Image 1: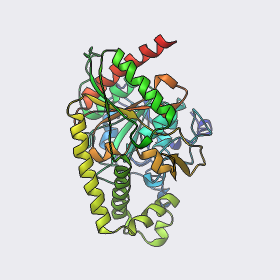
Image 2: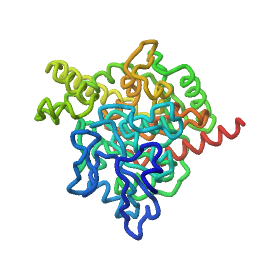
Image 3: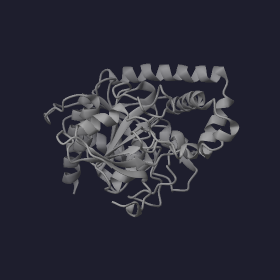
Length: 399
């Protein structure tokens, strides 16, 4: 494929690295976000300042995929340094007038356009899940620490996760097992699951998304699952704490840059770092306090259930040039609206899979997040396959 054919501007650099001849991923092609290192390939993390930088080595997570037989076809676009949720230079193949999501937007565009079977990105506040929702794809953020961050350009090291975006769940699960170093189980029949479905606390979700989530809950109950409606108070406060933590952590990474160098990082990065410089020690400590409380809260919520289902996004994907969105009747920056439901899983380090909602397949915003307990990634794979199958059957029966 030539660069002229990349009409969505998904790639920073096209390449072709053959995977091993034999392996469970043989025949699959993948792309890699431009903040994950592959030897002698682009490694700018989207920063204009680093546009000519080449990686000195290959990240272990990428070596696992190549060793399993997958072929790498290129490095994908990102918001500069991960400071953003729109990847503005990239277009959404499913809806060109809407944002593609970020910061792993190039990875999502590459999969959605059919350039590859799956893509690797990073997720610090929802950065694989948001683009997947905007493009109608599936995504996976593992338990923190299950996949090595070695060779990844950091944003907030205590929240950064390597993640996946794929066109279908079976591919995602197969690749996920390779990254986790685990053996894929047969598609076993699970008995009825105990599922928590999030209530629309503080009217965070748009009404249409709330109604569809209610229908999802009923469909899953009819399929033999036990459903509990669960409130998660403090979503906005958790999101605010997440923002403070990310920016204060990022400031440590970029603190040695001169003013001139910082100015070349990109507008969003500069704005974020300027904000972080004005944070007080007390504000950062308070944010970490909220994070620890959220982790305990989520642990208590997940303990009696198998998984928690919530929307990936509380709103429909904004227009491509939009800077603000409406959340709970209030005009807020797009980044706030987009991350309010995704960032909690980064604070808690819990595994999450995002799936398209079969009720409105033409509306990618209604992707569903499936979250399970810390370290239960392999169980989540099997549960997601069961949930997807049950929802597809229910949707078919409605037609």
